[in-house]
Amino acid sequence: MIDFDEPFSGREALAAGHVSRHRLAREFVHLHRDVYIRRGVPATPLRRAKAAWLWSRGRGVLAGVSAAAVHGTRWLDPDAPAELVRGDHVRPVPGIVVRRATRLETCVVDGMAATTPAQTAFDLARRMPLDRVIETIDALCNATDLKVHEIEELAAGNKGAHGIGAVPRVLALVDGGAASPPETRTRLLLIRAGLPQPETQIEVFDGDEFVARADMGWKQWRVLVEYVGAQHWTDPTQRTRDIDRYTVLPELGWTVLHVGADLLYRRPEVFVERVRRALASAGTPV
Image 1 (cartoon, rainbow, N blue to C red):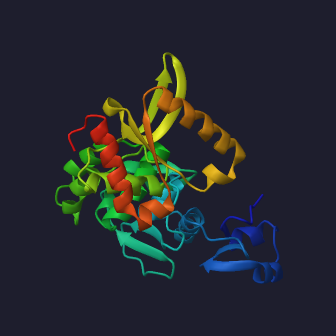
Image 2: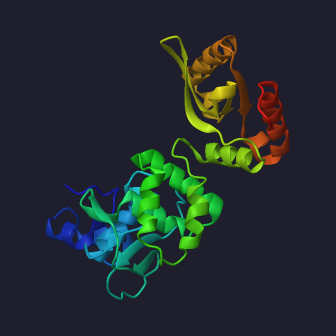
């Protein structure tokens, strides 16, 4: 049965009798040649990728943002065009970027050919703006358990690739422990302020009992940083959990600093100074 909330082949839907030509024209949006989706359904990066795959009739490899989407990466640009790699020349079409390449690491995800997570990260690192690509690769690593050394190994075998000079700088700042773009931005802010590079997803125990997992911090100085998003205030369960752990952590000798959107984006210098003072009080040479 066809899921009309996902891209589908109009030809196949007509042949199977799932839709009439009149209904196809009235209720669905024509995305690409023979590719449709129900009218009103948002075009997410994953749906754009699926539509591009159908348009290619299986003769391409999803790459870049599209490969990241099929690998489960979150927080991708919803307006970014789909990306395909082909070994031959194909005329571009609106909404799909087609690149030529022959030497790629590929895999199959849900029946679609795509670049592997390592290849995807390597490709993105060579093209996207620095902060945005770090956020994207952080999210890709978080979704797939991809490790930085895997990307580095692939890069070592592609030393002549276009844009490879940007890769070391990107990978030096990637951390798959970031669970959201604001967490990545918080970490980058601290590093660029000259503070020691924080570790992500720090687990705190009271003896053998698990107490909390913090977004980032420094174990040796028992200083933690938590990004407080809207859900921390609007979700009663999350709010109760936060109150409990923010009471226990100081009792165990941990200093916890909170940062929200206003502090991160409008007053970053205030936040950095608070962290600097906390680290200095803990004995950090900052």
